[in-house]
Image (cartoon, rainbow, N blue to C red; front, side, top):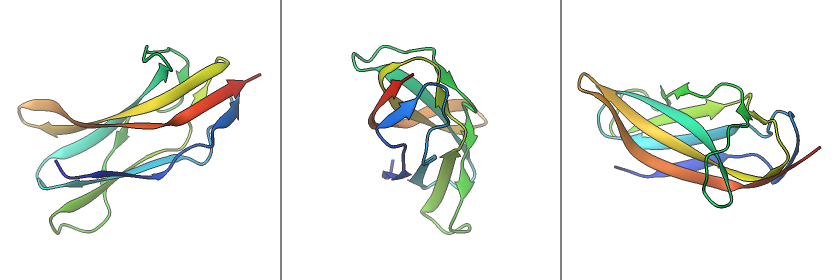
Length: 118
């Protein structure tokens, strides 16, 4: 699978419940223009444990940004994510390819650490 590039990600400090800014935007290069692609964010503690404190839209459909030429550039954006509990976390994005046989995890990308305070 071709590379994943983080175009923008939140600053390293946020307030509890505040929309993370700037929005998370990731671009992925893919070879299969017949498949659909989507991404899901997962909030993790520094120890790598899943934390159920992420609010907002938790799935984004990949949007082609370079027409139909291969490799296809797919963009994912998360504009309304917030973290509801103070602590130090990072967000992992799981990128999936959807075809007639189901969804397959094709890539994961970890974003910078975010410290959330009240």
